[in-house]
Image (cartoon, rainbow, N blue to C red; front, side, top):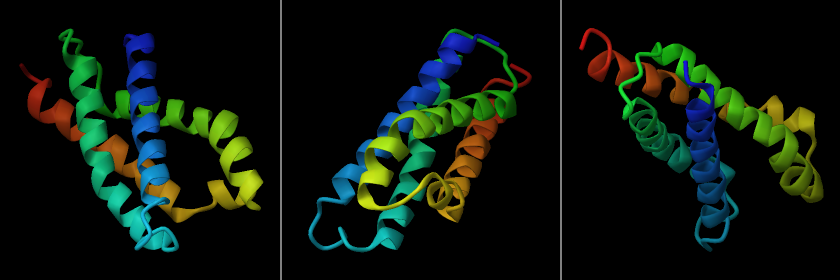
Length: 127
């Protein structure tokens, strides 16, 4: 596994998700509905993870998709610990506990891992 490329892929996914929540949080119709924002991001994250997997596997690496998906999600979670929670969540009155106990977060992680696995299974495994 090429860790640096996997970490960069995770950084890409985290950046896209963070930017998506920021943009959606500024759209008047949906800015007050976390559920609608989360549903939109849950759909978009498949595209972000797909593009990140495409970037990683561009160099013809054979890394198992589940391992790569976990590395990408782990990178995003670490960035959440270091950046998202202290600079976004806590100033808005939330905590590490509320952030990391949110089912939305874990659905996003699961979606990322599954998307990368399916990309690997369809495009890399056995080729």
